[in-house]
Length: 333
Image (cartoon, rainbow, N blue to C red; front, side, top):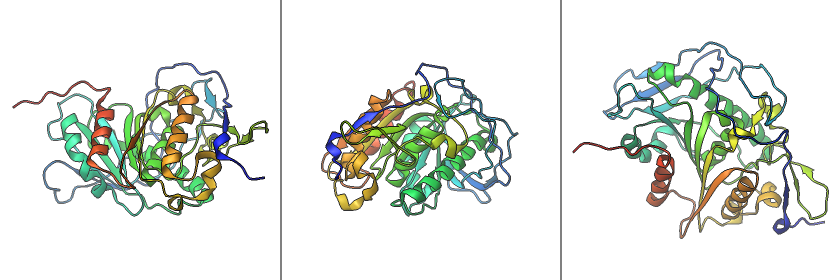
């Protein structure tokens, strides 16, 4: 029987009752061999600016006993951090923690080039801009995505954990993430996997999404179907090796953006159709709706006349969304 997208009824299954809890401090992740990272100020890149990330002390992840999906564990990660372009704002106030903004490029991109359009905003708001370069695989194959995006999440987490020791700067406890296309897929999946590390996500023009659900009822009246990763999160804790804290995930603010003309079915893989629709536009709408119904905090922005691209308006909207929870920065004349 052919499944009909328009009558999806979402069934949410969690391991406990949601409640608001304070965010825990980030804990260090164990690693065996660090990767180089380039640190660049607003001035031209200096010679020999490659730094080796120092290995932090090993520590178990702390998780509250309730409001989680998955059994508690003391397993630590051996993931290697990414090589990343890091831009330090030149007028950052001394002694005050900086906000980290992670910029995630799309397919066939690279960190430094993708970060270029964000440097002005980073300098204005005193953001530490971190843009890793990620060699993505086949994003159209759900099996490949299920493996790859777990590895990416673990490596991003390792990268974030090492930033204070690498830069010598005071940093805020929770990062903000900006992702486009394949990077938008990674951005929202990282927030699902490590909500204790994230405060804001701006995800533009993702081709696929992972619903924050363990099961769905695709056809009205049918029994709920388990929704494994990367479609949903039924087996995500087992894949990650640690529980997911939904109370913290609900505190993450999301801006899901997509071009109004980014609506070609041939541009996205078919396997997600029955859960999300068959275009980037439709999938952004379905994911935003599901996120809010599950108790999340999501804003959807459709940019009229825009295809699969990033425009100046989209960048402005992202900057404003990131800065909405920050004090106004006053600069001298």
